Length: 299
Ligand SMILES: Cc1cc2nc3c(=O)[nH]c(=O)nc-3n(C[C@H](O)[C@H](O)[C@H](O)COP(=O)(O)OP(=O)(O)OC[C@H]3O[C@@H](n4cnc5c(N)ncnc54)[C@H](O)[C@@H]3O)c2cc1C
Image (tube, rainbow, N blue to C red; front, side):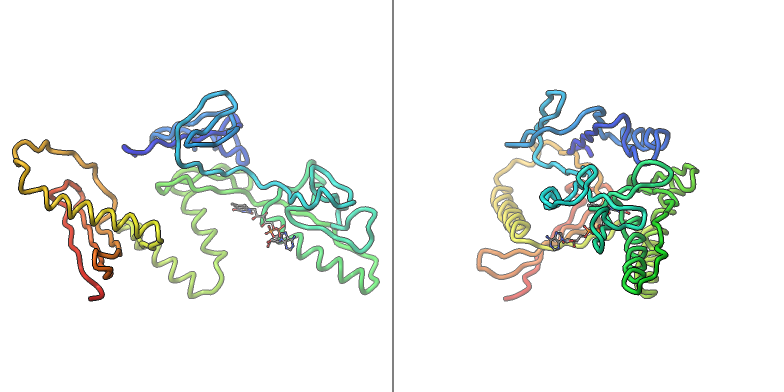
């Protein structure tokens, strides 16, 4: 966090408006306490040349923009001669497209009205259940059964993880926050995982994760390999320069504690052979505590 600046921009009054104001304010306070700057009532209007422009006219220099805006309907729908509502195909309560016998629509592209008011949101929870209802109604139509099933669904609630084993949520109208909400969120996703074996493996991994430090996996890409090559060449040149530097003039450099214990990079050396570079750090993470070793994998 010392070297990174996080800015969260939202057009809403508080973050996570899908939950409720109280829960959103809690999440906002938690993130702000961790150093995340939150800008509300504002949207992102453009991103170019390392600058993010906001609708309030401010410009933020940034090379990384993570866009989490909601899903929009497929533009293909606009050209279809079907009844539409807010860019989605209008269907009746049995998910049949109005005025088009034999045509049905479900999921994100369908605008399904909720008898309690408004429209059902475009989420997987709804899409999955609409699929089951439409299958039944298509079969009823094909077999000439007059009775069709209307789509009705009341969401149990919503949960979100906000990092550092903290979550927020609302289940059956009751607000949850903190570790309990995070634990419920994880348990829900675990329950949805297919196959018992996967569930058991993940449950064990997550349980171990509560007691031990983070387990990092390094997947190398051409860009990462280029970075590793740069690291190796920098260290080589440092080694060459080191004897000529008077050690007492070198100012001590504070390095913040690291989460990782060891990191492994695979790169190519000057001869084109693969080398594995191991960098390990103690919890203090000072340069003297850090140990590095290079191992040639393929001669
Ligand atoms: C980042 C993200 C996170 C989400 N998280 C959640 C969550 O936590 N919980 C939740 O309930 N919902 C979540 N959602 C919403 C959820 O994914 C959708 O509501 C759900 O997938 C909708 O299902 P669908 O079948 O209508 O559409 P999709 O799952 O989008 O399926 C449509 C399919 O049609 C295909 N397709 C598109 N155009 C064509 C074409 N011209 N020809 C042929 N095939 C085409 C696509 O490739 C796709 O496979 C999330 C969505 C996103 C984007």
